[in-house]
Length: 173
Image 1: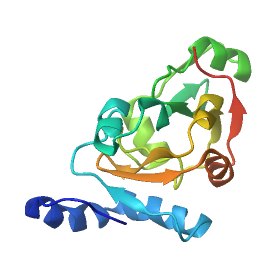
Image 2 (image 1 turned 90 degrees about the vertical axis):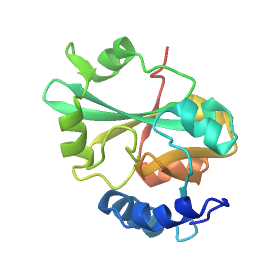
Image 3 (image 1 turned 180 degrees about the vertical axis):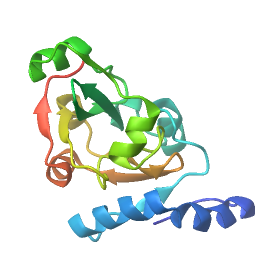
């Protein structure tokens, strides 16, 4: 974990964020994969891709949106570049499923263990299929949520693929 700020109140809140169960779970999963990966606590929220890009000083496309979809009776997590939209029609075709929709907040929490705005691509409560947007490979470094709207981690595309065991699919429109 590293931190850049002069705000003493923020410094006090960092420990609180790092001690939250979802952040601990995400960090544990990251460290098991690569002990050098670190959770970054942001002073400003990273609840949206635009917020995260502003806080990190990077392009919106370098932000990984973790979006959970309900496909019939199953769920699939799509890791999408922050400047793209996930295509329901493409998901329906890939999954050969007529009924595909965004998961509701309760299902997101139940399946991933995270609340919307802090859904990490790793450390889920229930193992689910993961699709990765190939547009993320256009960035040297990408940033994904780490269990809280103010917590992210930095990783490269190949390591994100390995960390999540995700399948590269054309899922954006």
